[in-house]
Image (cartoon, rainbow, N blue to C red; front, side):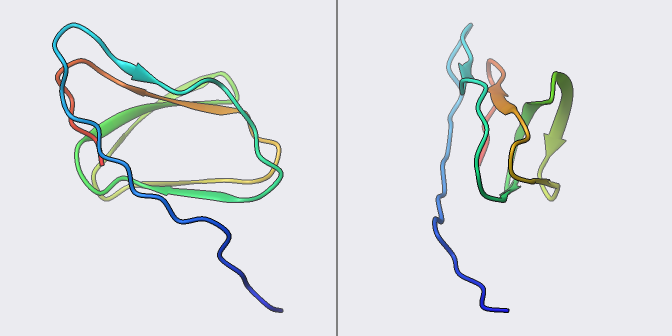
Length: 77
């Protein structure tokens, strides 16, 4: 089996008072692996909410709806 990396991204979100950052709910036709390097974020996966913290990860298989919410005063990388 030949494995290929299609996309690698590193994002850092710094605290902003009284606001939050959110991605729109979306799906992919590929697998996505998100690793929390520092801070925490709230992931909404198929309508259910999870708070992920540094050192945790989530694997999205194709077709799984998800979004990410960064809470006020939170740093996330």
